[in-house]
Image (cartoon, rainbow, N blue to C red; front, side, top):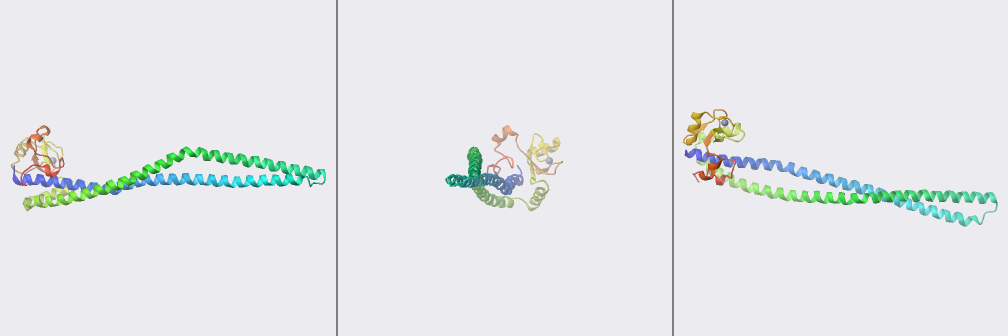
Amino acid sequence: MDEELSHLIILQAIDTRLLRNKAELAGIPARLAETEGVLDGARTREAQYKARLDALQKKKKTRDGDLEDSLNRIKTLKSKVSEVKTNVEYQARLKEIDAAHSSVRKIEDEILAVMEEIEAMEPDRKVVEAAFREANAEWEKTKSVVAERGKAIEAENAELIAERAEAVKLIGSELYGRYKHLMGTRHGLALARVENGICKGCHMTIPPQLFNEVRSNAKIMSCSECGRMLYYQAEAGQVAASGAKAPGEESPGSAGQGGR
Ligand SMILES: [Zn+2]
């Protein structure tokens, strides 16, 4: 194999890895935001639940006070019945007591209704609290996973950047310039593998004549469709035997081609 070509294969594998790491790092804020959004939603639902429960309990407390007032009123009215002098006065007292009793019944019904509402909320409590706990745990987990992953990527990047500098040293400046240009214009893939006569960069079949030349890996050829530099790699079944791996398919350390 052409020596520079073997170094290019290593370089492309490193760059593919670096680009993938960059994309993963760039995706971290969105990943965090999504989990935080779920947590915020769960927190809001729990707060709404508590607010509703608080309001009902407050209502019950107020009604409990009203009930006590009404019962006291009945007691007072009854105690005064003996003091009345006329039948008219007596009838009027009885009417008042009657009214107080019906007010008590009304308040008792209201208290019962509020208590039923509070009771009906009980099953929701477990659901709401569990959802919050779960969202919170997921949030804490995501934060630590992401932080760890970020550190791992940074560490890997430092290694890749050092390896990259070594690989670049072994490639002529003109060829490296061409590589960099293609990296910029061909979506981060300057060097494409040819498999079964197809350029894996643009997925077009390359002419037989060109394929024969690429197959020898003796010279750096370009794809007639996408312009990427090409190299040949044994098809899937033969990969293990040849020990060669394509850029982007394996970590650069396993590329196996010479030069290191
Ligand atoms: Zn192509």
